[in-house]
Length: 342
Picture 1 (spheres, rainbow, N blue to C red):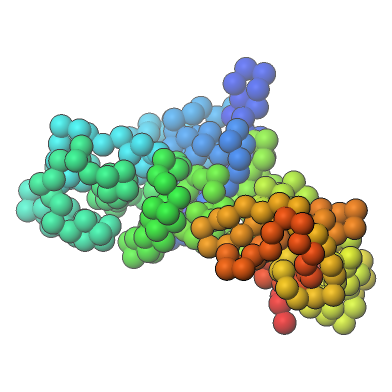
Picture 2 (cartoon, rainbow, N blue to C red):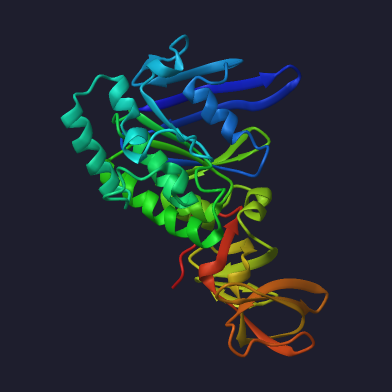
């Protein structure tokens, strides 16, 4: 079974929130709609759910046009940012809600609830009050509730964005495992590239209501469709370069990349610029501590670049440093083929 969007457009009077979106999600695939706030990703998901009327185009499931089919008859599950749990029901009551509506017998409901709670890491939580759970636990309950009726398609709208960074990172890993274990076809909306790349098999990048690129996480990261997409994905410096026999020469030194010979344009994530190796020299102008590294701002001639360094012994502002390029943090723009580190 396949979800197919053809020319999907959503307008609010004179404002076009989504324009001519074409997209397919295969059976068992997890696809992330990734973009900044206001890019149209949540509107597109709501259009798939039937919560937003289409101004144009078609949403199909398994070849059937969903126009005119009510939200509750599409067989899709929904998980939102706040979970929207029923505070007067315990965990089991929340998870079993869809099963109760479908008149599933009590014994089967109990078995399904227990199975799902084990899957989301909440075994034994059946009688807990949802108001006593942490934010992360509440989102796990919301996920279990959405999965309980075995939906054709699971729609997740920023399900982790209200959580703190460390918990969000862990739950993204857990979410990916749960979706793959359940074999669920899913459409995930997020503004967080780490979340999208962790959870999804493919990523669709949106900007100003349009899908600018669709590909695997590695394709999108290493071969962004344009400069704006690259910058949204964390590229801080764009360099003109020349490639020859697998070596690309830049103003910041050479790097081995499998790209065609000739002119090339490289997009550098901060992790692409490493301190302590290489022949290029620069001066540190600022540094900011992150969880597991130090982010540096470095002047190299008339250019300013971002770089990373280990937290232990990181250089101070004013220090002179040597720089080298790391292929793992480099994207190739306007070049044929994906870059591959040697």
